Length: 281
Length: 272
Image (cartoon, rainbow over all chains, first blue to last red; front, top):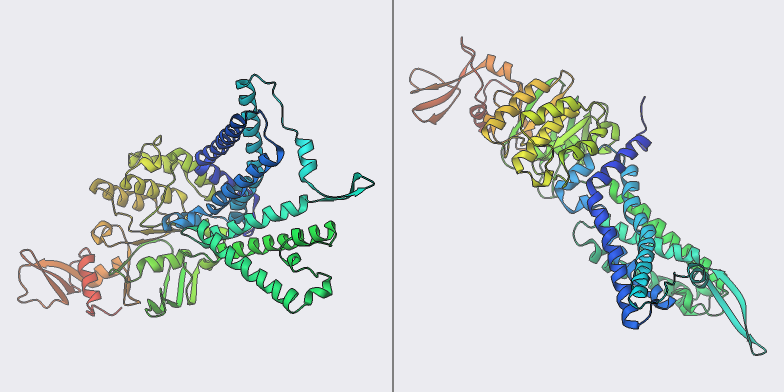
């Protein structure tokens, strides 16, 4: 029976197996490092602060810092076969389609990191809480995930009516968060397939240039040429970030920027696939 | 099996490697691809296996265009480059991870070749010497039973007994439907192995012949002096001369080095 040259589950399974067998030691080591770093760093802050728990916002900032820094490093190491000519021979000659090879890299780099890092960070956080509570002989307080997600996943507007603070709107920002993470992850993924030397630094450099050019273009058309009036976007800040979109309702700006970044991510994803297709050694 | 028509390739705009290269190869042979340094042997092999894209011209291997890198094409081709990478895993795990890609992979042959090359299976590949790694990859290449095996400088780094074993294993493993391309500088290593020779010079195939055909048409000999003989080509050697003589009564084994030197110096031996 002839198998498809675009995608075959059997071949895809072989590629997954090959990746795991070739890299399981580095994968396990990486997981241990992230878990260890999360435990140690959150633990240091808890012990230094004299508490078993740190505040949600501090913990979240620490989490995001690690997410983007470690994510940048890890996702930039995707397509590691293209870092050397010798590895590239083996990779390109492996019987698998470009799509299959692309999906394998996608699963083991951006997807694995985006999903696994929060889990490992949480584990590390809970572990350090446990250690801190043992040291201080305090009862163990597990992290309040429901309360935290309720706080982070919604953008709320309040107003004071008759001396009382009332919530006037609540917008779910999970989609926007996903788009931001997806766009950034895909940016590093594209850098990883495009640059054989120093992919992280080159990705950062080119992304600064790219975002700068895009921002200037948006400003030029929407602000300078005043095209923004057609879209009722009068504030110049609104062209650059949802934070500056004063006067625009939350749902509109979150949807607009969510879709905008999702589109960026998709473009980066498609371009990185095309880059993989044209590789020569 | 391999059909190349009007191939044009260059590494840069200024230097042209191949301008109009054409040749065909059929399965069932072990072909030695010879050429001077920089003649483009490795480049040609990479184009044949689809690692490099030709600038123009037609390259076909079986029913496939190599540059498409279709999995069904890659399943039938094994390329052993001169410089290679092996991950830091054991021999057993490497076979587990990679054998599944090749439908005709022969595990029994793999084990027997590993034993003949004396390669330990419990050692990490990254801890092996260059020669051991090369022997491992040669054993793996043969076990894939791919229709096209492309070996670039396969004897580099092998010790003398391993070179002999390499010849023995290749000669004993190749089947009628397979084509083996061996590119090497060390012509002595493949002298009694190849049954077809292709010499590339100045971007062209200057000779492509069966070894049997050459040995029937030319005689290779060592003589003390050149008196009374009229060689097509001669080279001074310790104690006399090595000569290529026109067809004689005696069939002789082909001195590939001498043949190569004569051809690349533009000597017309008996047409192309």
